Length: 248
Image 1 (cartoon, one colour):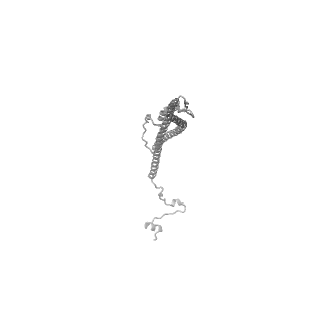
Image 2 (cartoon, rainbow, N blue to C red):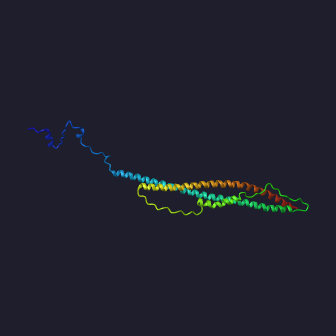
Image 3 (cartoon, rainbow, N blue to C red):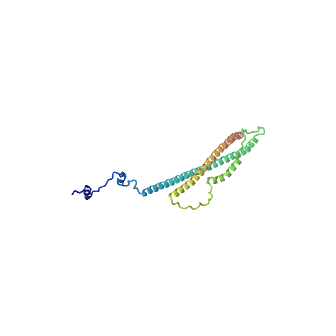
């Protein structure tokens, strides 16, 4: 008795798949294993998100640090500009005092010229000093006192005088999530940029004050130089008259 072929295959342990010509290919196919890309665990995605959050926080802190560096540099420039402005004010005061001193010398010289004119013999001709122009002295003396009085108020604005105490800032809670940390850094950056804007505004005002002060001093030097030249001319005439009297 002959054994059917499919029974022989079963006895040898080889699986036999019965096929039906009316079945579809999808029913006969063996289900495939999922690909390696589809089997990636969710932990890998969470790690990538954490890395992005850490990167964003690091960059936000770096931006805040650089903004603070800009503020410190602007404050250093403001200190140098403040010293320069103070030096200009002292220089202007020295110009005014020197010009006032020249006017005082002119009054004493006038008395000396009158005395030299009264000296000489009875029959000698009275000596009259030659003058090219009148010595007027400092012109903007009143404006200078007003500007000096405003210097104290200006020092408060520029931070030279003791700073005024401000109200303490409210206590802030420590941020927990990454978004809260980034928002906290943004708030710090806004405050730093506000301080930087105020400092740059002060530097602009100081630059304008420097330019105004330099222009005022240049204008004050013109009459001062004219008065000094007139004093030199009159002093030479007084010296010549004195030598002439001594020669007699």
